[in-house]
Amino acid sequence: MSETHVHKETNCLGCRLANSELPVHMVYENEWVACFLDHDPFNEGHVLLLPKQHFRFIDEMDEATAFAILQASQLMSRTIRERYDPFGITQTQNGGGPDELTHFHLHIVPRKQHQPFAGFYSEESWDNEALKQGLADTRTHLAEAVEAQLSVFPGKSHTGGHYGKTNR
Ligand SMILES: [Zn+2]
Image 1 (cartoon, rainbow, N blue to C red):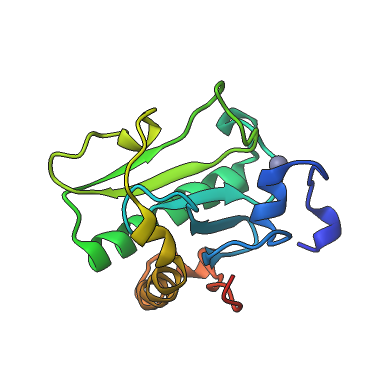
Image 2 (image 1 turned 135 degrees about the vertical axis):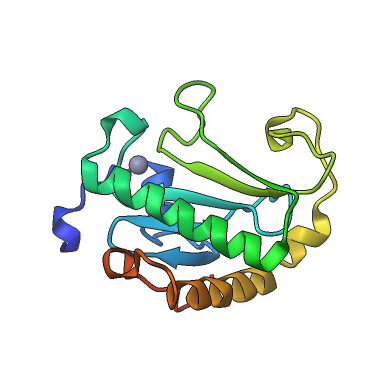
């Protein structure tokens, strides 16, 4: 798919992030989707998975994009499980208001025991300064872990893709 066929909304922040028009810590991307670190992580390895084309809701997606989202979420779950051995992995998206991004984004969050299922939606802030400072390192390690998973991932023929080449 050439860039000219990708439907993007010029003013959509999600479109710009997913297509690396703004700096992100990319850990995985392919023709359809981009997966990068949440800039305000709940735990190390908290990522966002976005379609590269502009879709706000999952029910608007074409079949290839919907499949790519699910497949990439599988890849990321395996990677996170392998790397962090979490108690659980929350995967959630909003499907409506409040939705500041107005572009579909799936949160994938490794969770420690006793952490609430969707604690990162809480109004309460949490201390993640160290995590924020470490985003570049996290990105490096997670991208390497994705590469390792891709070599054994059953969907790799469809998934293809690569981790971000640049450290942003
Ligand atoms: Zn968009």
